[in-house]
Each structure stands twice: as C-alpha cells, then as structure tokens.
Length: 338
Ligand code: PMP
Image (cartoon, rainbow, N blue to C red; front, side):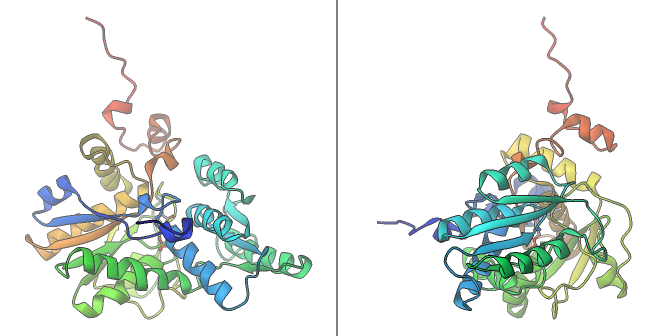
C-alpha cells in the first residue's frame, strides 16, 4: 500500500516538468519543479512543515498551541493546513495589498486573518514585525502558548530545501543538472537548494523582480531597488538569516513584461496555470540558459497555482491598468457570429 499518514506527509516529492517552449527557445532543457502540486498549492508548504516540526521538537510548540506568522499568503495557507493536520491554531498577519484569493484561502483553511497596511520593513507596523509582537502577546496570555514562525529568519525554512527540494532535484535528474535558478522571498528556496546543489557543481542563479534589492545587492554589494512588479511573494531588501552564507553564481533582473507573456503562453499551450513568481523564475531560467549556452539542463521552481491570482494576473482590467500585456483569450473580444 502507498498511503500518507496525514496531510503533512503529503508535502514535497513534487514532479519535475519539462517546459517545452522555454526549452525550445533556449536550446537547453528547462525543467520546472511543480511546487503548486503540494497540498496548499505552493512551495511554502515545505517551509511550514519544517518550521512546525522544528518548534515541536524544541518544545516551543505544544498541543493546542498557536502558530503566528506574517506572510504574503502562501506560508499562511501552508501553516494553516499543515498546522490543522497536527492540531494547532494559526493566526496570520498579511499586507492588505495581497490577492483576495489568498486571503480567502487562509480564512477557509481555518486561520484567523489580520490585515495590516503594506508598509516598509523599517516601519513597526510592517506585517512581519506586527506578527512578532502578536506572537509574544498570545504567548503571554494563552496558557497553551504561541510561537512566531518567523519564516524570514528561521532557518528551519531553508532546511526544508536543503533536505527536501535540493536532493529531490538531484535524484530526479540523476545528477544530470547544470543549473538551478529562482527568485527570493525569504531566500529559503534559493539558499537551501543552493546549499544542496552548489557543492555538487550546479550553477545557482538568482532571478529578481523589479522593485527588489537582491540583484543590486549581489552585483554591487548595496540593495538599491528600482521599479516595481505585480508579482507577489518575492522581492527582498536585506540578507535574511536564510540567505546568510549563500552567494549565487549569477543574477538577473526580470521585468514583468518579460515574465508575463511566458506565463500566458504556458497556460495556453502547455496547460500550466501558474502564479507570477513562476514567470520570473522561468524567464530567469531562459536568461541563464542563454548565458550558459545550449545543451545544458536547468531547473527552476513553479512556486504556486495561478487561480490564486485570478483577480490580478489573469484579470484583463487589472493588467491594462498597469499597462501590462493582456493574453488574447482574456482580451474580451467576443466571438463574432457568422
Ligand atoms: N513565490 C511565491 C508565490 C511565494 O509565496 C514565495 C514565498 N514568499 C516565493 C516564491 C519565494 O520563496 P522563498 O520564501 O523560499 O524565497
């Protein structure tokens, strides 16, 4: 029999999918790690599971306890679902600018949702700092206690990719992999997979959206973000604890108008319905393929499922309002009757 003991046991071991158009246009084999097939439909289920297991192992999280976190959404969904399967309550703090679909899913998954204004990290009301204070408050007043998941600086997050994602990619490609690339939110995926694969000779690249400071940080030593992006869950302005000690071999800055047509083509021609960060990652893989030259194998991450962004990324009115390309089948021209 092949039976998972519970939902937590169904996290990870996602397939690698060959991306046809990306491979054909670049002359390399480009594979996507299908993280949208996790139970919570994103890569963040992995971090959620490792953070919860680590807190339980350390005795910080006890039966009936509460997990508190500030998240752009996916970590909240992962913590709520995996937490529920292990008997914990979840309180999620989210910037109000995140997609309605993610907020609805967090509530549906049984978490209590606190929306805060989207303000920079240095502001005390930033969602990350707010969630830390809320965790302390609940821990002080609730006899069952509470933990702050703290995904940005809790390295149990990166460990999920050191032990899971990285070795899975190595095994699935039978070690025949030349490059890995993805964007940074907390940095757990990039630095974790990097720690697993760089020592084996795999080149590791950073794909950074506009508005994020990572590209300039790695190129010049100073984070100087410019421009902006509609992608959610990625972009970073500092070296988080998860990124400490990691340096990419190469880095690319990817504008939305380069990433979005790739996503729309994938949905139309390859049946893959993905979120915005996957578009940045695939565009990064294509740039890395051009830099490495034809004949290489490059893996990237398909971070989450596209239905989570139907009101934004796949909404023609929203795209037009941002002067971004609109896929022709969403453009709204009704079919003419003969
Ligand atoms: N894509 C999406 C959609 C995400 O939610 C996240 C996590 N915030 C990432 C990519 C980045 O992953 P990581 O936190 O491991 O850097």
